[in-house]
Image (cartoon, rainbow, N blue to C red; front, side, top):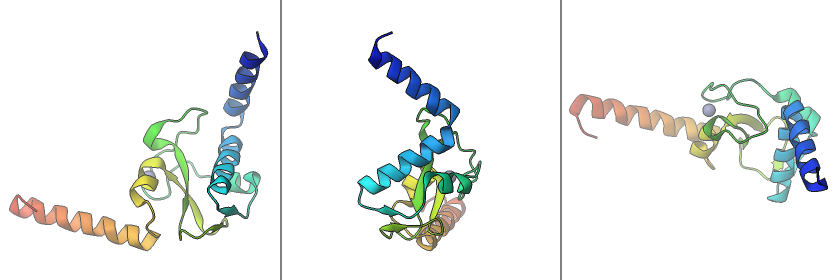
Length: 127
Ligand SMILES: [Zn+2]
């Protein structure tokens, strides 16, 4: 096996064996690259991991591969540049993309607006 293939195989084995830690390292690196400042270690972030998305409850898929809308993502709850364990939450990709740059309160207001509009549409047959 050449060195490049060996490195790739090794990397896949490590990621498979430590999916939470690898995710935490990657997401901290990614946020730092985007100009945020993470005030926690990957090990501290791992302790915050839950099996489900904190908004919708979807079971998060912790594999070394990207799994689409069930992939775990780190959400900045207040969109500040300084990330602490108290202002981040772990969401499925779908919730995080939908929430976008809204605060938690803004996102919940948006969800209520969608539900209210859907209820109106159900009664009249149109929005
Ligand atoms: Zn979700």
